[in-house]
Amino acid sequence: MAKRVLVVAGREGVAPAFQVQIELWGKVLDFTLAASGNEALWEVRGSPYDLVLAPWQLPEMTGIELAEIIRELSPATRVVLVGVKVTPALRNRARSLGIYALLPEASPQEVAALIGRALEVPLPRPPRAKPEPEPTPPPAQVVTRPAEAPPAAQPAPPPPTVKLNRKQQDGVRRALRDLVVSVGPQVALLADMAGHVLVLEGTTGDLDMEALSDHAAAGLAGSDDLAALLNDQVQLGLFLLVGDKYDTYAFTITAETLLLFVFDKSVGEVKLGSVWLYTRRVVDDLREILS
Image (cartoon, rainbow, N blue to C red; front, side, top):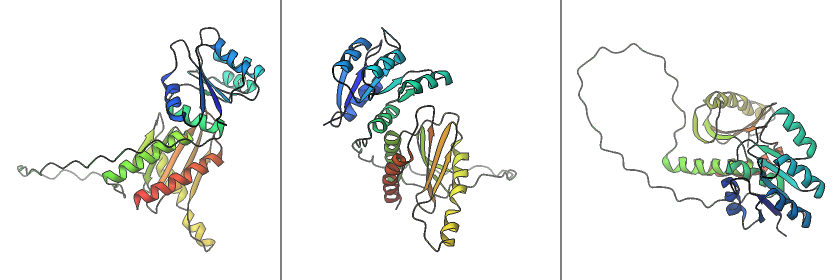
């Protein structure tokens, strides 16, 4: 039997991020729309739901008031509130009420990832777009300039050690987009072992992804040495950092590339098991794309 999800409309109707979920999960989950908070409570009272998606601002009540009543009516129902200005006090109150997650912004990717984790169901794979044909490069032009004194030598950063063609870039981008939607990191990227970002999906915010990639590559560099001590071969190196604000994961893809993604813990907690499950599939896809 399909798990049941109740979507609550706010003051401006059903949020676009919620509408996307109905289209994405329509063949997997049983969706019901409630026009208001009061109608949502009637629905929950009549037949409990597995998950309720609601905006923070409702005409009759706040989202947290709605969640508090839902807990009384159906303790097993998980509630996700979006459009929330999250503060430490609000986060503590939400935790005491058993609210599953608070989202500052209702991005479709974050909502989709939360649905998958809350209901413990794999995200449906979106259809893969056909790769666009590579554009024909313009003919080379020769420009003759008068001789000039050579400029003083300036130190330049080393060039990327890996170059992807157009087909590989498209394939990597699809795989990273699938990872962002399935697992819910703030940002995911493919980089070379020198720390150069090759393809990136998600929102970087204030994060310096070049610096993070460089440090992640350094963290993965010891995998071969450790395997040699064990008289073994590395199949998949893992670098993990659990922080107060962020969780950071890095995986070896090939000898020259790594996968890096970062979770913003203010958006929601993530379990290592679900990360491992989805990431192994993405790692295999990336290795096939880069081969």
